[in-house]
Image (cartoon, rainbow, N blue to C red; front, top):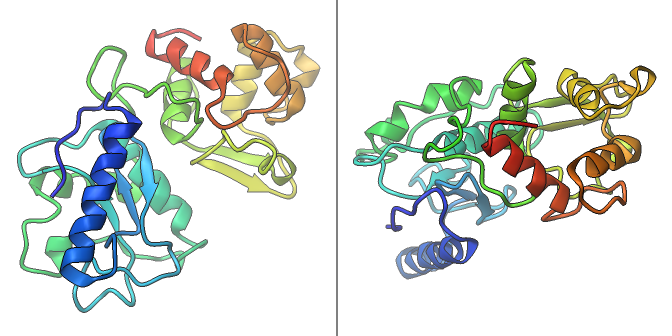
Amino acid sequence: MTAQLSPDASIAAEAEQMRALESVGQSRFGTGISYNVVVFPSGRAYQGVSWNRRGTHTGGRNSTARSICLAGNYETSQPTAAQVSTAAAIYGEGKGRWWTSAAPLYGHRDVKATACPGRHAYARLDDIRTGDGSTPPSPGEPGGLVVDGAWGSATTRRLQQELGTTVDGVVSSQSVVWRDRNPGLTTGWRWVADAQGSRVIAALQARIGMPGGQRDGKIGPQTISALQRYLGTPVDGVISRESRAVMALQRRLNAGRV
């Protein structure tokens, strides 16, 4: 059992809860942490057992199923929008990549006599399946964007809201050339060989004042450098881990402006 952390809990507090989960799994099954991924109210996700290994989360199904755990008690608490958004992004990314494209999503209670994942989390399963209804709340509400410098689906959803494009947490059709060079671009990015660009990136390019001929909807050194200049952060054309530019963007989004 993990503590019910707040959406603004520190990474250190979440790491402590991950160690608690690992201890429980070790004492019960002798295998360490039971789950493939654990998502906290902040929206941050931590890997447990890797996707290609057998966990110990659901008796009788551990060899054929993989697990996303929402850390906390969702019989009494509501999962945050950031949690739902992250879980939806992981599930969406996993289909066709780690799992079959038709991979079903169940709650623990669907296959075992248990209250898990809790009635409030269970009520959000359709949102996780479809990616709908998981937009982070408006600034000032619990579950707002965590300023962590990682540009994942939650940041994209808020940016899409701000710029008036379709809100799905996905940055579509981006050149795979830039994926490994920009480790701060995390969940929800769709990397392809023949990139066509994304409406949200094109709208961002317009917002930060890039000339019309450069508004191709594609991330890359030119767009990143322009964004860094616009945000007043160091300009190197790269979105690194814990990126200062992404932190500045997240602060602006939490304030309701870009």
